[in-house]
Length: 196
Image (cartoon, rainbow, N blue to C red; front, top):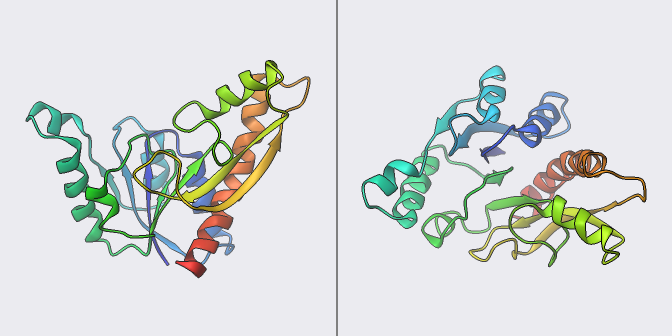
């Protein structure tokens, strides 16, 4: 299975995929890691694992008066050259439009640090922690879902509940969430490969 992994940050979830492949837990090859941020440490993780990388920022498009649709179309064309079976958004901080998604129907999946219908968009972990402090929820979790134009609203592939403990700080809760994400992203890639 050929994977393209799209990232914007430190790449701990990318590392979980790399490790699962290396350990023989996931029958896949990462053929490209894409980032829209030059400083994303995920790019270094990919280089350390001898995985090809692509840095493709939106800013030059904006400076030329082009919109996200053109960016997404060009990004899709570039990725299509790598013939991915699955595109994994692992901390990719950019909403993809139909100009991208329509090129890869049911082949783009996303990791989101909240349960279905809860805390869409950014800062899901902090929002859940704050909601727990207000006694609005007793737990949170993470999910992998197929990507649709609506933010974090696609069909769920897999999810994991992560409890919030009374003595948790945001840091301890976040660490437990990330551990759950690392397990979930590998399991969801396997599931999507079978059902996609």
